[in-house]
Image (cartoon, rainbow, N blue to C red):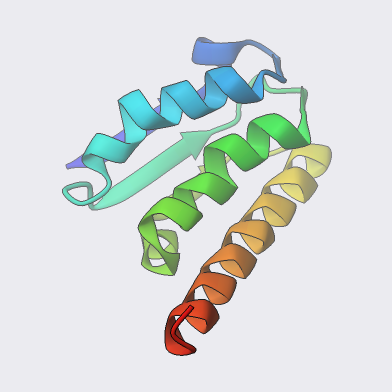
Length: 108
């Protein structure tokens, strides 16, 4: 099974509401992470995105499910400014995973 999300259909051309992104991820993505072969995010029609939205959607996805989820995630039709936000959120998610792993390794 592949999970495909066209963000402009769900959020319009400016993805800004982090709380709404977190709720969407919790309800529409998280339940399928284990069973989906791919999670496809299509950014066609998205002109801009806030960091709170992107972090709630992507950084938290990685934080919640671990770095292995990156093997399933695909991005399409990203404008350069949107790609920068995505890359930043992915880095933040990976940093959180690394911090969690370091704490766990040290008994924290």
